Amino acid sequence: MKRKGNIFPAVIETNNIKKAIQNAAKGKKHRKSVEKIICNIEYYTLEIHNMLKNKTYTPSPYIEMKIHDRYKKKGKNYI
Image (cartoon, rainbow, N blue to C red):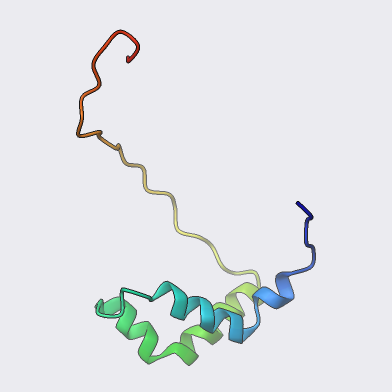
């Protein structure tokens, strides 16, 4: 697979950010938090653009959780 470089300017274009917001909102448009963003999509697009451009974006911390399998595994090969 070839590596593509210098894509950051294309990533922070406002049209790409707006498309990403709309894509992320698919199937969730009834949620109040998503409605708030979709109603003010121009504002949030510019906010994200400025955070990326000025390198002030910080991702939220990871949330650790245990995943429980609903089926108990039995037998010698399973620990």
